[in-house]
Image (tube, rainbow, N blue to C red; front, side, top):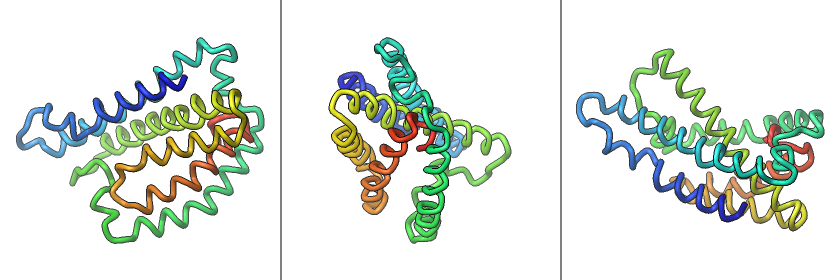
Amino acid sequence: VLGVATVAYVVFHYAFHWAVWLPRLAPGPGHAANQARAVHIQRAGGVLCLGVVPGLVASALPDGPTGVGLGLADPAAALGAVAAVLVIVLPVVARSASRPGFWEHYPQIRSRVWDQGLHLRNALGWGAYLLAYEFFFRGFLLFTLASWLGAWPAIAITTLAYVYAHLPKPHAGETAGTVPMGVLFAVMALDSGGIWGP
């Protein structure tokens, strides 16, 4: 599991980054469309490397997919955790979005015209990517490590990996925020028996 996770994340990070794909797309007046395509390729690469590949490996493990967080032992705990996170985290995210420099990096797609199709592709791409991302960190890694080392060592290791994954972010505050969020999301996942809360 650790070997697959390491290779899968490195391949995703270096082979599917949107900036790697943008120069490969035809240059010209469609630069904004090409930039959007490059972001969609990055997200599809994330689904493949962080979701599909670990999911195939998880299906061969003794406990199968439910052993890596794809089940849900306690739906009430998951819903309660989601409500608590929304109350605590949403104001912080909203405040961060109003700070100078935020709009230089978000949204990731830099199109001037956001038609209905682009909104739909963006939402579906983000949804699939974030599901794969949560499965990778809070499912595949966390549940496997917790069954091997216990809950708190697994939470510490996956939080460290989560922080490392955010080091390329342009704002130190965003990376620093992954420490409490990594712990909180890991506790939510283990407490509810699945990745669905985070």
